[in-house]
Structure formats: C-alpha cells, structure tokens
Image (tube, rainbow, N blue to C red; front, side, top):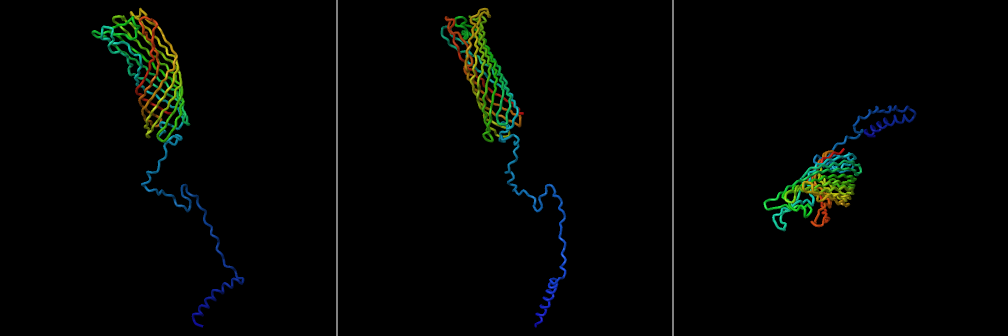
Length: 377
C-alpha cells in the first residue's frame, strides 16, 4: 500500500473512534449555561427608540422659505388671516366714535331779490342762505357673535347754522321773497339766519360674510328714529319794512325701517378699503310754522302752521379706507346723505286772497368727511 494511503487511514480511525464510544454509554459532553442579558435601563426622554436613528431635516436651504409659517390668527376661528382685524371671528363687544365735518344744504333758502330797476320789471340776483360747514359726532356700540351676526345701536348728532346780510346799493331796492305780497314789498336791507338740529337713533342687526382672504361683506337691517329741526328767519328794514321779521320753522319726527350693506377689501397688515350704502323709508309728521310781523313785532301779518303726515325716503353712501392693529382701528372717508321732501314750508302767494298759500317740498342733504375710531373687546 502506498505511504500516502496509510497516513489517511490512521487519521480517519482517530476521529471515528471517540464518536463510537459515546454511542456505547459513555457520559454525554458537558453543555454551557444559557446566556442571560443584563436588564435594560429605562430610555432617556426624547431619545429615539433602540435601533432607530434620529430624524434629520433634509430640506434643502433654498426651499425653507416656501414652508408656510404658523397662522397667527388661529385663535380667531375660521376667519381668513388677512380679514381677522376687520372681520373678527370671535365674539365680543365693540364700539366706534366718529368725528363728522359736514356741509348741509336745503331748498327754499331764498330771502330777497336785489332789484336794479324802478319799474315793474324784476331784474337782479336772488339771494339765498347757505349753512356753514360744521362738526358733528356719531357713536355706535354693539356685540358681535362668533357666527358672524351682530347687533348695534348708533346715535348721530349734527348742529349747524348760517347767516347772510344783503344791502341795497345806489339805485337798488330789495324785494323780500318771504313776506306776504302787498304788505312788505320793499326794503333796503335783509339779515337772514338759519339753524339745523339733526338727531338720529339707529338699531341694527347685521351678518358678516368672508368671501375670500381679502374680501368680506356685511348686510344689515333695522329701524331709525329721526328728529330733524330747521329754522329760517329774516329781518327786513327800510321802505315798507320797519324791523319786519319772518320766522319759518320745520320740525320732523319720524320712525321707519332701514336696510343696507357694506364691503371691505383688505390689503393685509391691517390696511383696507371700505364702502357702505343704506336706504330707508321714515314715516312721521312734519310740523311747519310761519310767523310774520312788522313795526318791531307790533303788527302781525301772519301766524299759521301746516302739519302733514308723510313718508320721507332717505339714502346714504360712504366710501373710504382705514387701518387696524389688533383691537384698535381708524377709518376715514367721504359720506353723502339725502333726505327727500323732508320739509313743507308755507308761503303766501296772492296779495288779494289772504288764504292763497303754496307749500314747497324741500330736500335736505349732508355731505362731508368722517374720521372713525374703533375698539373691539
């Protein structure tokens, strides 16, 4: 047998012999005890779970500006962010105060004609009285509900007056337009004065709607109580007039429904544009009185009154803009209000028939600027 074969046989015999001995009753080999791992320590707060790597923000730096910031107006309900100052989504009381700089105009404000001829012809300008531009105030207070509804009470006060003086020049004469014909027909001077006292009380219910992030509208309806007093007096002197006075006064008290709407266009950062329009029908009584005297009040030519129940239409439109920071706001704009057929002053038109009168339906308009300060709670 070759030498290499013997060496392989001896090696196989040495390996197989112990295995055969174990199968014939010898003691099994000793086993090692099971390994028990040490108890795990409690996880550290904020640490990632075992086996998981901490998350890292892999957003490229050039895209970080595209991530929207948290909404600072989340506490105001569902109102869009840009409209939150002007259309708050939370409930609460609010109040506004306004300064008004208005000019009032009315019809039937003539008081004399400057006549330059000595015959029967009437040739000359008609002198009229104008109200002065004056200040007024308006206040509103109410409560806004979270669902968009609100209730409000408003008050408007405006007081103005006017004065005018006309003297006849050489070769001229004044023809009074307010006196009874055939009695005081000529004068050399005329001093006219007028006064307007304007009071409005409004009770409104409104509802706001946010159309998108920048535009909202509000509709409202309610009732208005109005007290509007106008007085017009003229003092004539010279020729037929001896301290002759004509006093005309119109007082209107009425109550009726109002309806309107407003729109707000918000440019963010609190700046916004504003438009408002309203109209109504006010039913009430117009009290019109007329008194005429001469000789310093010693001679009475007229003392009468005309009371009429009527429905007076009224309309208002305003446009402007403003700015609001959190709960404080300021708004300014231009406003026009028109009362149709508010007064019915009486005039005598015949020098023979003592009872021949004419009533002139006159309007009243107010227009000018307003500045509003508001506070929301």
